[in-house]
Amino acid sequence: MRTVPLSTEQAPPISVPLRFFISTPLFLMLAALALVPVSDNPFTNIHSLALLAATHSITLGFMAMAMLGAMQQILPVVIASPMPASGIISWLTFLPMISGTALLTTGFMLGKPIFLELAWPLLGLAFITFIGSSLFSLVRSPSSNATKTSILLSILALTGTIALGMLLAHAYATGLLLPYEKLAKSHINLSLGGWVLLLVIGVSYQVVPMFQLTPHYPKWLSFSLAPAIFIVLVVNLISLLLEFRPYWVVISLQFTFWLLASSFAVVTLNLQSRRRRRIADATLSFFRLGMISLLCAGITALANVFVPAFDHFDTLSAALFILGFAMSIIIGMLYKIVPFLVWFHLFRGGIKRGVPNMKEIIPEHWMWRHFWLHCCTLLAVLIAPWWDVAAWLVSLGLLLQGMLLGSGLYTAMSVYRITLRCLEES
Image (cartoon, helix red, strand yellow):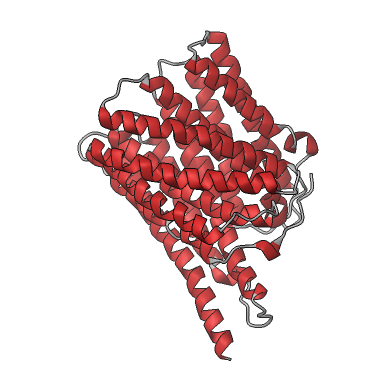
């Protein structure tokens, strides 16, 4: 598969994606606050309120916020179909998203259902606005490629994720009797296996060859992987909701899903080993860590199927997927995309001289510090179920990561503003 030509003339103003990106570090710090152990270690119980608060702060406030910001850029540039009224849509997504996520996290942290009841309509508004405008853009797009297919399927998975999430939040807040375990599993499967994984796959088809100078993804993978994963998720959802769950069905669906996810990780690592530029790169290291974590998440998830008595396999698999895979990929992409956007918008503005090199916008050594800090945080997460002190280390790691990432993104914004001002005055 070849990367599609970029429609850079349709790119939105730099403020549109950056307002999403710049808010992500705040939710890493909020997750750190939620994980501060008051009495018990939150990692010993996957259903603890502290862990639920931190998980939603990361998945909604960090991951989803970054992904929504990236989509504002991807749809017009890669899919050649900008969102309608992108400025208005951006604010209608951003404001309820940031307030709804803060309320939801606070509700779990304090154990106050009223905050959840306030949160779900705001989050519903944010995501319905985003989903509607994204589907409108995708339908009218003239492009026909694997990236578009993967993004479309990820949006469909997000639709199911949000519907189930809103139902669960409302039911929890009001005490409504529902099959919580089944709905929660369906919500998690669609959000992580559908929305997150499928969007990362679709974006990787373009980002990995373009930014990491690798060969292109093979056609057999790019045109079949996302539809295959989506089909497995739909079958799993139907079997879960209809309670048609013989043991062989559980094993078959789990094995098939992780085989497909692992094939993406293995092919990506293979492509990266054949990249044209051999110099060590921090953003590439984040990406590689993400792929290795995805493989390890699959191993622990399958181990949980075969050895269900060992409760912590479930926690380890979720931690490896969320912090090891998704968070690593997103941090690496932020450190690559934000400097590119700064350089691109300065250059597109007609400035031909004095535009800083992408390596000068966020220093490489800053990214490397974040990478090693992220590795230490991930290691602390993996041992936290057995060692209470590690819960404090996870909290400290997330706090420092939020500060590092926030400083890096603020530096990029400062470079853009200062360079623009200096060049306009000269």
